Length: 237
Ligand SMILES: [Zn+2]
Ligand SMILES: [Zn+2]
Image (cartoon, rainbow, N blue to C red; front, side, top):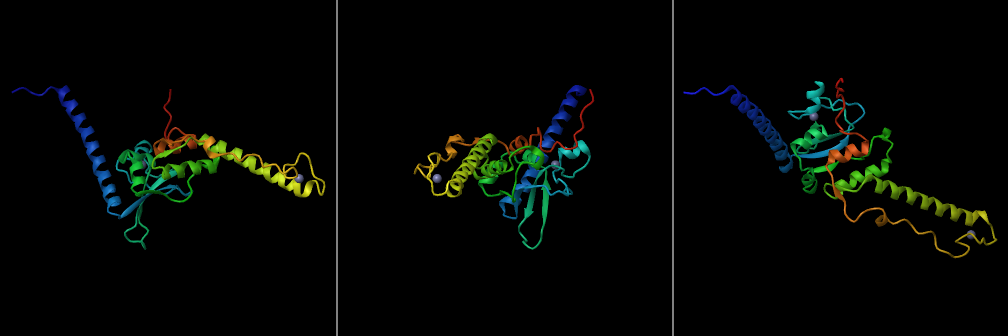
C-alpha cells in the first residue's frame, strides 16, 4: 500500500478549509435568509449611532480578525431586527461588508422588501460631500433595487437648481421693493418676460441608473476605499 504524499495531503487539507469556509458561509446565510423569508426579521441599513458599542455577529467577521475586536466602528451598519415580538427590541448587528459577503445579492433583498433604510442615510458630515445629494443617492439605490446615479449628477443638479431658485427670488424681491412704481427695463416681471428656465433633472441624469454594490456606493460617497477599514494597521515597509 502506498502512503499518500505529504504535498497531496497539504493540498487536500487546504481544500477542506476552503470547503469548510464555504459551508459555514452558506449555513450562516441560510439562518439569516430563513429569518427574513419567514417574516421574523427585517434587515435595516442605518448610520451607526455616535456611541459605537454594537458587535458584529458575523461568524467570520473580517474587521474582528484584523483588530481582535467585534465592535462596529464604521459609519454604517446593518441591523437584523426581530419583528416577531413588536414589544421586544431584539436586534443583531453586522458590518456592511460582512453581511454583503454572506448575502452578495442585496438588491434582491431590497426588491423583495427584506432590506430597507432606517432613517436618514448620507455621507459622513466630515466627508466634504453634499449631504443632501448623498442621501438622495442612497434613497435611489433602494428605490431602484440596487441601482443609482453618480453622486456628481445629484450635486450638479442641486447646485444649479439652488442658484436658479435664488436668482428668481432676488428678481421677484427687486421687482416688488427695488424699483417702486417705475417699470424697469432689465426686470423680466416689468417687461412681462418669463423667469429663466428651471434646470431640468433629465439634463443632469442619464436615462437609467447603474448597478453598484451597496458597500461600493457607501465607500465612494464617503471618500473611503473600504467602509469597514477602521482599525486596519498599515504594513511597515
Ligand atoms: Zn463584521
Ligand atoms: Zn420689475
